[in-house]
Amino acid sequence: MEPVQELKDYHVNEIHLHRVLVAIDVDDFTSSDQAFDFACTVVKKSNATLGIVTVVESKDINVFESLSPASMDDKRLEASHDLLTYVKKAKEFGVENVKSILTEGTPNKEILEEVIPDFKPDLVVVGSETKKVLGKTIGSQAEGIIEKSPVSVIVAR
Image 1 (cartoon, rainbow, N blue to C red):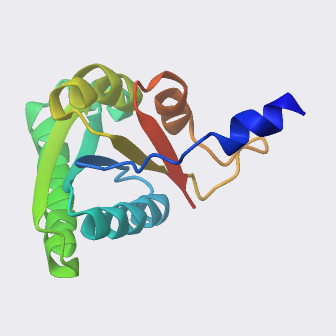
Image 2 (cartoon, rainbow, N blue to C red):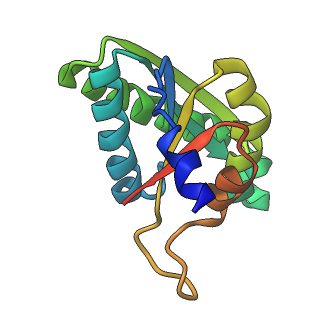
């Protein structure tokens, strides 16, 4: 009976979101769009700042592409264009404060070690993969962020 008394004394504390980070995977627009829609809705209602991050994955580059700087430049340009499209869509939806973040490397590592410490979000939103691999619907990158993030993470489906 004592735990019930403790619960009665508990009061809900309102959480104020100031910064929300959404991870965009340019290789999986379906999961990214779900995460993006969720993040925009939350940010608009809380008048927070939206950070939109995409990571140009260095592991996706084959040996021949790595020898050609133009190939990597093309990947950066394409990712930058996609990122700017998301920024435009967020503003059209009514999100006033938007910051785009483009980086390179392994997504969960870059987001955990560079982006989160720099942007300082209160919440990170990731998408779940649209293809099932071995019964999983959360990709390895999102899983890494969920496991090691110092702030709350929501998986949007």
